[in-house]
Image (cartoon, rainbow, N blue to C red; front, side):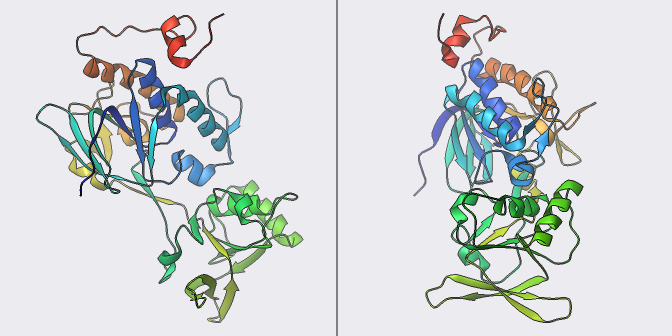
Length: 350
């Protein structure tokens, strides 16, 4: 049975910084939004790849981590009560006879929206998976893509697989001194060469040298399960063709993300080198009602920066407002002085 379509002003595709700030900008012009993202948590590639790395070029913030930025964007958008639909990818989009857009996700969620904003970075991100037969049976129970709650793994034997920032950051987070920690943490990578920031690699090597972190070089080639079907160990093949048994309670996979353009290519939007072409006055695509911002768009002078995406979100919100409220003149208001914006934001009157 098909689900009842959710009727809304706007659907934002992508819950990264661009998509979250788009929700805030839409709220300022009194337009509600639902947000869809293929990843299981908001934040996009920042959270999946660089959650605890510092960012230095956000206006007015000398330094913050990606996690702090995402948390702040969620708090900023909170007055407008965005509804997040995570862990699902937009699989279909079609223009209806009345001009609205019918959207369907991989989870069967359906929307009827007046506008859609594509804010999906360079496509829908999919975690790169370990190619071990049978591992998918343990997804989201013992096998997780990315580290989302280190404290939940206290007392466990944890294996972290990967050699990029995501894996090394997870290994470091799990071996921080003090507090609740796993019983053991093993970093598994095919060889003793990492693709990450130099400072991160140095800290990982220090943890390995101190004994806080174990390192195993090899390729996982099989798994072992208990009689009741739980994942018990990985079989790891070394370069000398010997097989090592690596017991574990939880496997954290940190191989990075693979961007996929996915069904976007079938929606009729004009693409240039796998990027969406937009009108820079409104950030609308060639398809009426479909807008795009962030790394997915291209135009002369485009720079792939978070602050550029914030600017694009502001202009897109006015383009969408003209579509949602065709009979109204949308005025620019300032959050410092507008009593109406203060009401929307819940700012107390003094």
